[in-house]
Amino acid sequence: MGPLQIEWEMGYNQSVMESALHLSGVEPIELLPSHIGILMTDQDIFLNTMEIYVQHQYEEMTTLYTLNNTNSNGEYSPFSSYLEMDGTSVIAVKLSDKDGFESATLEKTYKKVRPAKAIKRPRNIKKGLAYSSYEGIFDSVPDFSSLIPLKKGSSQRLNLDEFGQRLDHFAIQYKGLISIPKTRIYTFHLKSDDGSKLYINNQLIIDNDVSHDSTTKTGMVALEKGFHPVLIDYFENFLEEILELDYSVPHIKKSPAIFWH
Ligand SMILES: [Ca+2]
Ligand SMILES: [Ca+2]
Image (cartoon, rainbow, N blue to C red):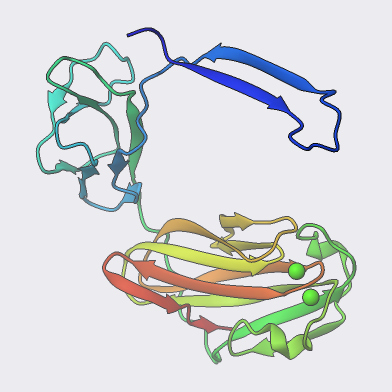
């Protein structure tokens, strides 16, 4: 079998057009091994121990792995059902068939982390978040400290309807606490139109900034049970406006975050 090649041709295919443009050619296609189709456990941080799973769709292929060895000449072993990690690990996997053909290597780092400490429950807290709203033409989350708020208040939940329907050209900063039911790893899902950012304990967890239509970005963080300072920065340029924050843990469906201020 010869090398794979693509034969191409382009031009006008309309009787009213002169065949002024007609190009054609042959290009070889270089086939390189890929790791597309190999899935490794998505969650990449853990508290104590973690089970790492690898999935792929190729029944004839054997999964091989190596630990903490970024050198491709490292020793690979067959991967059985899962790997249990108790420390930060770099895992590289590849697939191999009986003739020794190998896929490209997929490498992922799984990091053991400590949960961020909770703060003491402040006295007299109420449900919801404090907000400051601003007017202006923004194409990214502004530096709120340099702006004068148009309005300040509090809101039981993230609700842009409070600022009028189909408003354009505004920004809001929400501030408060998030209550965390159990010490573990949480995945936050921040959906916005246009841009937004989520900070927990002054750490940027999700950057969903710049002008765009409805886009959800996720971020994972280890949190101790209790209260954690939260900050949500948001701006709307024009057309639709959306802001939603949910969190999830494996095997439990997404729930809206519970806020206090
Ligand atoms: Ca709008
Ligand atoms: Ca918009």
